[in-house]
Image 1 (cartoon, rainbow, N blue to C red):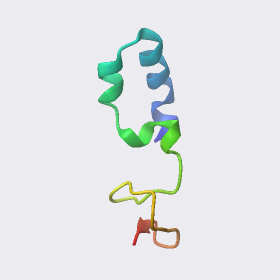
Image 2 (image 1 turned 90 degrees about the vertical axis):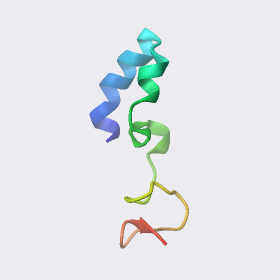
Image 3 (image 1 turned 90 degrees about the horizontal axis):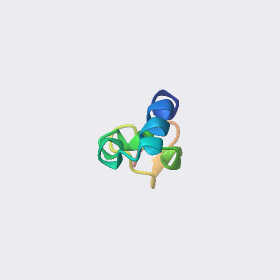
Length: 54
């Protein structure tokens, strides 16, 4: 998801359109590129085998 929205995020940052940037999915940010639950997005308690949090 990060790679999918990278160009769009960059364009919105250059334009200073923070409102539109805020409406993009939260998981499309590079900062959130980490093991996260597929259902909830929770970073803690993540079980890699299942891909979800406990």
